[in-house]
Image (cartoon, rainbow, N blue to C red; front, side, top):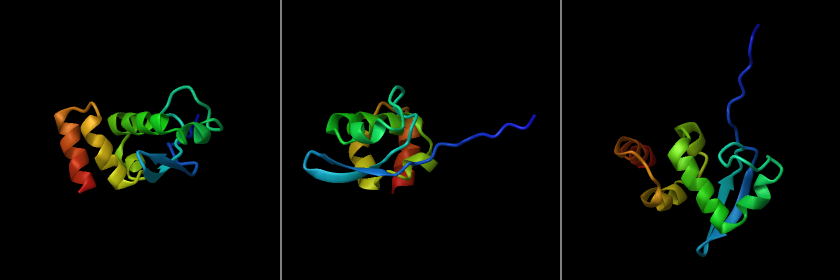
Length: 96
């Protein structure tokens, strides 16, 4: 039997203002565990949720997903993320 795998993809972007900076965050189901794809855009408009969502993406997601985020926003969040040194170096290289 053939199995079709569905890879993570963005359902669009949501504008959010965090600390006076307006950013557009991609809506990708699965980064936050419990919200449904329909609930996620509304949740991501809240600054605290947007920051947590980005931190989880930095810690867990691969480059095909991270490249959908604004690079300046990822650079701002990187110092606060809990990353292994090798992952931190790799992401800093990809963001440069």
